[in-house]
Image 1: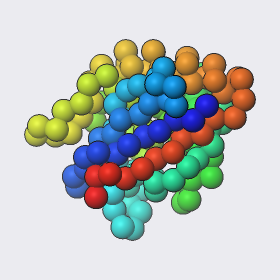
Image 2: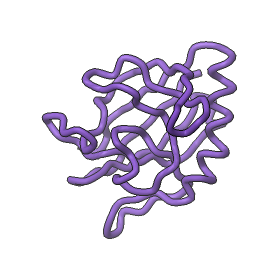
Image 3: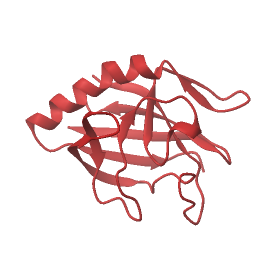
Image 4: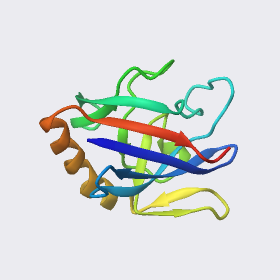
Length: 139
């Protein structure tokens, strides 16, 4: 299965995007850290590109989570966990059902989105290879 993240809005703190699967059975908003030319730990989003997903156990979340493999200059990048602002990302991609570009960029209903999307992604990973293509349409 192929997933697509289209980054559509960013500022100096964070990046909003939209994620969907190739068959559009999975859709949600995303939130990531901001773009910076030079990496700033816990403040810079990962580079656009195509990444393979792998299932790994997260001690922090105490469950299997999809991680992005071979992200340049990053380790442990999670493809989707709960959080609503850039303070929750630490380089990972957050899932939400709604987004806001007023005042501070944020996503909402993150737990609802995660509980809906995560099992679908994990089921696809059990079937075979999965990939995420991330594109920058915000710069």
